[in-house]
Structure formats: C-alpha cells, structure tokens
Image (tube, rainbow, N blue to C red; front, side):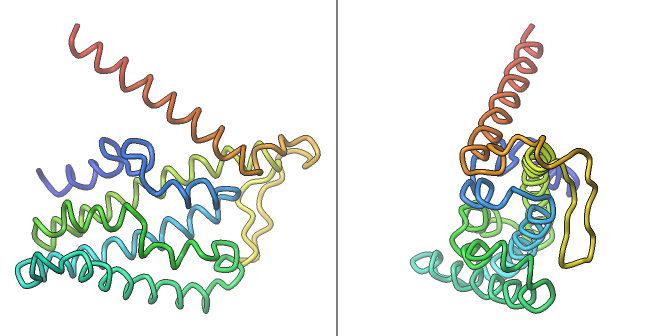
Length: 209
C-alpha cells in the first residue's frame, strides 16, 4: 500500500468508529459539542502517531512476552504529555473531556494499532497509519457532534477556551433535548452506523452485479 492508501484506509475502509466499532465510550460521552470532538480527536491522534512511531522503532527490541506492557508504557507516556498540555493550554476543554483524556491509555484504537500495525511496519508507514486512524476517529466524532449540538441546542462551534460564542442557528428551546442526553448519543450513533452499513451493503451488491 502507498502512504496515501494507508492514510485513506484509516479514514474510510477501517474507520475506527464507523467500521471497526472501537473507542465507543468517548464517542458516546463527549460528542455534545463540536469543540469537544476536535479536542478529543486531536488528543487521540497525537497519542496514536507518537506511540505508533516509537513502537515501530522498538518492534525488534521489545521481547514478545512483554510487548503489551511495553506498549502500554509508551502509550501512557504520550497520553500524559497530551493530558498535561491540554490542562495548561485549554483548561475548560480539558475539564469537559475529563477522564476520557487519561483513558486514552486503554483506548482500544491505540492499543489495537500498536499490536496490529506498528509492531509489524516501519516508522513512516506507522506514522501514516496513526494519522489515518486519528483522522478517521476525529471525522466520526465531528459527524456525531454536529448532529447532537446543532439539533440539540440550536448552536454550533461554541468554544469558551477560544472566546468563540459559536453560531446560533435557532432558539435553544426549539432543540431536541434528547440529543444532548446519553440516550441521544446511542440513537445518533446507531442511526449513523445503520446508514453506513446500508450504503456499504448496497455498494457491495453493485460490485457483484
């Protein structure tokens, strides 16, 4: 695969949220506002790329018997760096994302790419894989965020950390409050997954016709 194909694979064919169904906890919990999706997506992407590169470089040095603990140590290091940086630079956003930033350490997406890809490929390919998977995860978060924030509150892109009040598209009392509650996250994600699976199935049918 070319570098572009590796990147594109993470965004489309193996999108971690919409195709592999990984990272569901953060996807359901923090997608009430677009800025949350951007922050979480960037945080996970930085950890993915950093850990992928280091694990790829050390893949022939780390004994197979302790590879998982070693991967967790690498991932935890990058997660701590991202967590402390966000706490200092964007305290309000960090407060909203809360425990889900430290929990990147055990996020299935990061550990899965370390085991399935970075441990078997060179640093450049692992970098592209991390960027692609991170971009795919971020895009998925943003799709869910836009639907929930826009239809739930009537606003879009509110960002207190950056002094941006966002766009007020209609009165807040006209919003569907269910969408910004936990059940709304399940409904939004479920409908998106159903739509994507229907589209993929139809596309596969056309290929075989």
